[in-house]
Length: 321
Ligand SMILES: Cc1ncc(COP(=O)(O)O)c(C=O)c1O
Image 1 (cartoon, rainbow, N blue to C red):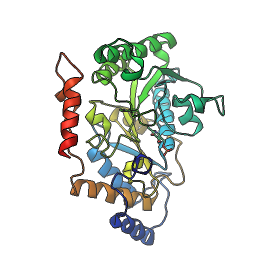
Image 2: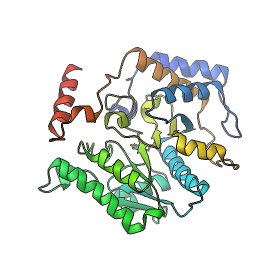
Image 3: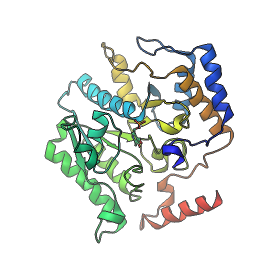
Image 4: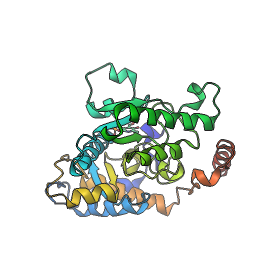
């Protein structure tokens, strides 16, 4: 588990220790509120934008995965307010998903044990079934189950009203829920539904990011084109706490062109020492070619079967490593 899914570069990396020490001598702290920034945060934002998929080019920093997820909730709701559709505020998540431990993160996640405690949770959150073929598909083939799970999303959207839905959020591969690899067609089917109803797609990459699935992000492995994405953990290999939200042009442009600020942030957002460590972490991942560039899932599936080529490729890559 690499600590708690985070020590992606491994223990004993003196370069990361040095990056933190050097940065603390130069500038131990500054904030990123009020249109300010500092060199490590700016450089890290650029480095992240270079490895994120699609147009996820704008980076908002926070201190933990939960804070990044809270940021996504506030951002997508604010986006729809700017678009003059404030009624679009429901976020659809999945049973047995994990999105953190703050009130919003726990509400968004689908962990029954967490929902029992500290209720009531944050309003405007709905859950659908998880894509757990092995445990919950009955007689359905993997492909049929992928379609059925996307149908569950469409059913939920129609139940609550398409005009009331802001976003769908999911981990590319559910981590804390049991490392649940979805059917190979799952994300394609989910994305069709999101596009049909113009619903924003959020990928929670807190575990899947920074090499865990063979690419920088699980979205690249599973062919997901998110509008917004959270990351933490492997971003700094866990050496210091830092998280980020990568925001696509659609949401970013709306926020930038809007006359009001986005009133959100944390004292330790993009902390200079943590940002310097994350920057060094990304540099080392590139230098050591840590990621083997696994082809996206669409390049590994035939039209007839969504299962076998995916499994075969994964195992052959694993054995090469
Ligand atoms: C997918 C996902 N999102 C969010 C979080 C919350 O991150 P943190 O514990 O840093 O708040 C986690 C933590 O494991 C996670 O796995």
